[in-house]
Image (tube, rainbow, N blue to C red; front, side, top):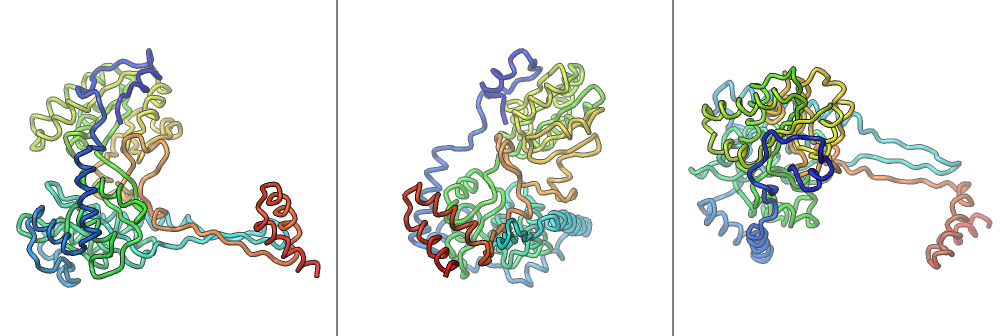
Length: 439
């Protein structure tokens, strides 16, 4: 999400920049050094298997040669070491995310219809067989990641969901992340991080068959590993860095808008944050509020560079221009703080997830409390793709049943088309059935 040359050309004369990003380029998503490192690691792991996995686990994460899988009882006990309020919050987030996924699943229905006499067509939704979920636990453990990946997969009916989470400095898994995986229904959990974790799941190196799909967020190396493994396995989507945009008018609370922009800038120093507003006063108030709030944040070393280098405030003349600008940005998270939220809801088309009104904030979804999935397209991907949902774990399999009486309707047309294409074997399959029908 950036104010690209295409953007400035398309909207010339229709906006004013009250604050421009200091870095005139998108955050690096395809670093050649990252690509080369990941490529070498994946090739090494594919050739040398678990020996290479353990070598990388030792050199990158300081892991010993002990078992990498956590036993089921140990996973279940992880909640016993958590403060009660944290444990309760994790259980609430898991329950709400799975409830929303169940609502989505209920609206994906099998069907069968006779579209011509004797020709029945249908579709049924079948879950993939095995999913591998990456559960980040670095400087900021993403506790809710298991809700979105493990829990939603289980609601979809995926029989086997395995997870990998990187070790903490003491070599153990993060208890909150582990307990979130437990209440989300994880089948097997491994203490393994980074590229080696994704490769182990994709290549079937964890004493079980390869998974069919890999999901979950991670750093640049994890994202690049997913990209290179696509084809060997399916993936959810390529995402990152996290981004936020806000549409606000003169009725918005500048302090709340500023806080929500910084809330997503906290994800990393290359996380873009954009405000599009119809009010110059509100825009300038938000800029001042951001600078003021930054001084009080313990994570200002992250939020500050993100806002300085990738933050923007865009002033437009009308709500129609606000929608046009935002649909071009196609942000991952989009908040609307206006007197006309319903109008914007109907008009907007390109976003990962929408947060309507002053009382809504991206953090509610980030932490799993809203129920909607926080694994969403970035870098303009919302123009053509949606975020992770229960449907991503389901294969809509089509089928057809043809009765004898439908044969002439189908076969004669197939004969004509196949003959025009010069595909005699295709034509023969139809001709054979016509002869059988006539006989």
